[in-house]
Image (cartoon, rainbow, N blue to C red; front, side):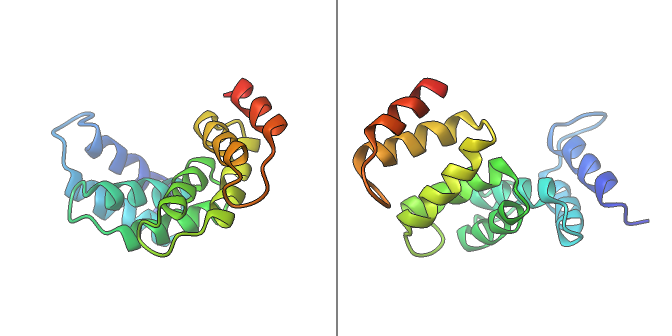
Length: 142
């Protein structure tokens, strides 16, 4: 009937071989249906599948787009992944300023890897001014 949460959960079951065999292509299809309805978890996980080439071809541009949709909804993991793509110039141009902003958003939600990556950017002055005191605080949190 098109219930986004059910599509997402069924996709996870196919992805992790819960209750049957693993089927990453079906996971992609189900996540795509849920993502099209605005489900941030599905957008993030489908982005990861495109990022890694799991269940179909790798597509970094699509991964970046999907992470962006979920990140705009406040999804910390998507903010972290999109920040990484922007920092490294994957799937589009490099943008250290935006990467730093996204890491900050995810770090504020307690995402340890974002705290670590943001700490590194602050310690090295990437994407803005150097702030070793804040870097130290973030490393301590992570």
